[in-house]
Image 1: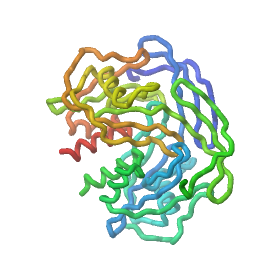
Image 2: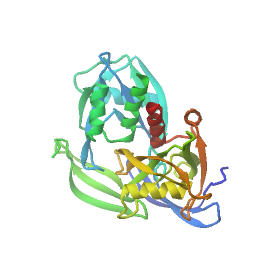
Image 3: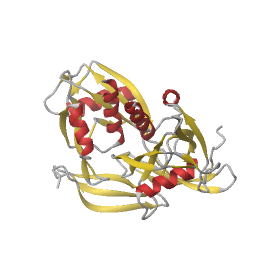
Length: 179
Length: 179
């Protein structure tokens, strides 16, 4: 048990959605005082760093409703119930980009918003890419554009804030460090 | 307007909390079909890369209820209503670590979970650190331990998953790239 552990004395379920669950926990703090924690449960996700044999990074642009703008990101997707992260990574890469790969290696996992959400992302690196299909095979509520850029072009996209999320900046720094 | 824009036709408020707001939007997709988006609104946050004159990275360990475990992270905190991110960064660094700084530079901003939340983090780098107080001045529901580590030790913490969140890994990569 961690010395700062916060014991739950009551849980109030707020919302049970298709993707997220929301609840508020009453907790006892290490000093004995009471507080509340607003918590979002998320199934977790994968993200994939994929670089073609020509040295181009495979990215996708999609509309993100929470920000009401389109973002350019590395391919990513939620874990399905009972699906291993590696299988999700293979599936999402193919569905979103049409690429299959020879090897898929786990680099890191990380929580995205530890202050209020338990979302974890498993970040993979795909190598030995082959384009399987001309068109991506997307979920029915998913619309994405494929981009293939150099690392230098990716840094420009970061400057322009078209790349503007933590996992994708982390992925670009990973590729920069690999150089 | 982006070609993939999702127009909102109805909004269902779910929860209006102290930190987060949750709502479900009915949207019309680019192909005319309908879907729902589960969305979390968050006030945004800052995070601070702080390296002492002795080359030690200032980190904090705290209990994260969403994961039911303690994580080691760079100092961070939520934006208060009407507070500029730079002021939040100065305040959080001092409150959580007791350090004040001569300079505070914005490096990046990034969304943490663009698939369901609008949380944005402004990542700063603090330089010219001076320890102002022996004890950190924390919020009443906040309990943190201060750690000061080398970059090599930080990579070990990442391996051990005691550092296990996106912003802190991204910050350690930034410091590695600066070397």
